[in-house]
Amino acid sequence: IFIQVKTSDEDSKSGVDPSECRELIKAIMEGLTNLKVCGLMTIGKLHGDPTDDFSLLKATRKQVTSALSLSEDDFELSMGMSSDFEVAVRIFADYSSEQR
Image 1 (spheres, one colour):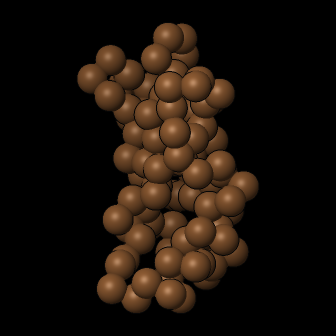
Image 2 (cartoon, rainbow, N blue to C red):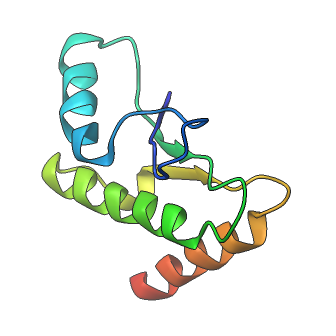
């Protein structure tokens, strides 16, 4: 499963607060052993630049994987829709170049 993270303040968006992701994922890993958390997902702002939303998701992954001793490379991100996928790709590319 992917955990949906609310990275924007839009009322139309839902998901877990980034600060609560670690505890939620830990609870799933310990109590719902038939589920595997594969990563995090978000939908960026409907209007405007979603860069901050996608950057927050990337930072949340780093915090969660570090705190739970998980591999960042094995913990996927799903972000971007048809209208903003280019921003998502840029954010991911920035992450990939940081790993080299």
